[in-house]
Length: 153
Image (cartoon, rainbow, N blue to C red; front, side):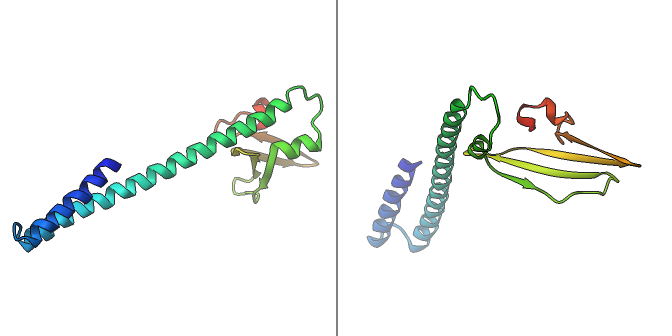
């Protein structure tokens, strides 16, 4: 793409010279130069978008490597301590409860360090006379959260 952008610069320059020396009418010059300039703008936009995607992928790769280093340090954990949780979890978002189904469902999103949101948990609380039960499940699969790795979908 970069090669074509450079080619287009050369073509527009030659078109201009041909126009100046009378080899090309003004109308023809305007028509041709507009087409080439439009193509060049589109290519430059594509190059910017692709560069942005490459930068994002590189950052994701760096983040994943940092997360894996963090996880490797925790391989022999026998107890989940506040320090370990603070290292692994960036933040937890607790959303407003939804009672539209007649049951209280509350969504929780866990953001891991360097990775971001990896899944959501829905907390379903059903209340019957004298007791209440709480169950966590993955909204996409319906699998109980305790049966999933990290309790996340």
